[in-house]
Image (cartoon, rainbow, N blue to C red; front, side, top):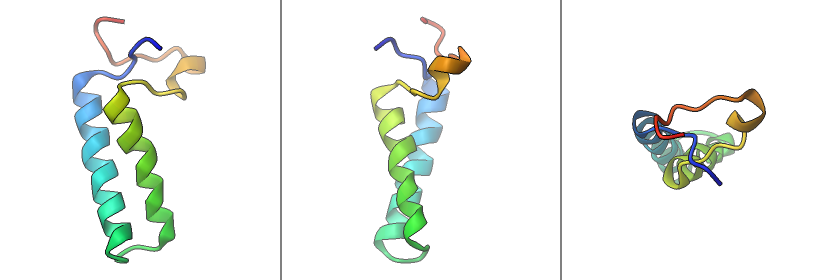
Length: 62
């Protein structure tokens, strides 16, 4: 896997992911908030499978 998520994109994904998961844990949003796991994981690993077929990269080194 070649990284295709840049540093600013990663930070944003992690913040959004953590926020959604926290809101789901405290039941402030409906169970759909658990979708926050997706941006959280893609932000942590630095690779987004959805970017692959679209040919998108926000990482300067890729």
